[in-house]
Image 1 (spheres, one colour):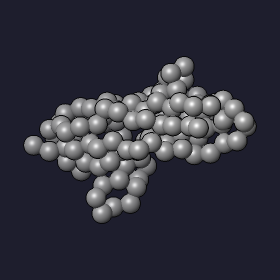
Image 2 (spheres, helix red, strand yellow):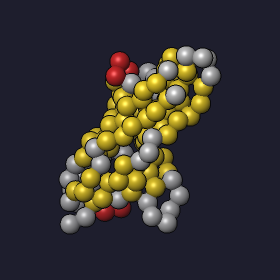
Image 3 (cartoon, helix red, strand yellow):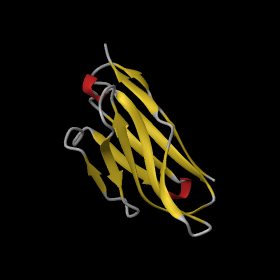
Image 4 (cartoon, helix red, strand yellow):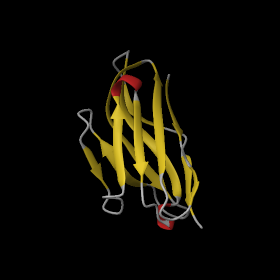
Length: 120
C-alpha cells in the first residue's frame, strides 16, 4: 500500500503565508515527479506546481514568484511554500506523486487534500 498524507492547510489573511507538506509512505521503491494541484469550488482541478526527481520545479503562471515547491527525497516529502496569498488561491490542495513500488509496479497517487482559505 502507498499513502500520501498532506498537512499545513488552514485559513490565512490575504498577503499571508502557508507551508504545505505531503509525505509518502508504504512499499515505495522510488518516487519520480511530485506535485501540487488545487480545486476551487465549482472549478476543475488545476496544476499548481510540479518538481522532478532532480528537483527542477515548474509552476502555473498564476503562482509564479509567490509559491515555491521543494522536496526532501530522504523523507519522501514534498513541500509547497506559499507567499503573498490571494483570495483566489482558496481551494483544496492535493498532493500527487509518480511512485514505483517494491513490486516494480508504478502509478500516480493522490493525497486526500488539505483546505487552504484566504480571507480577511
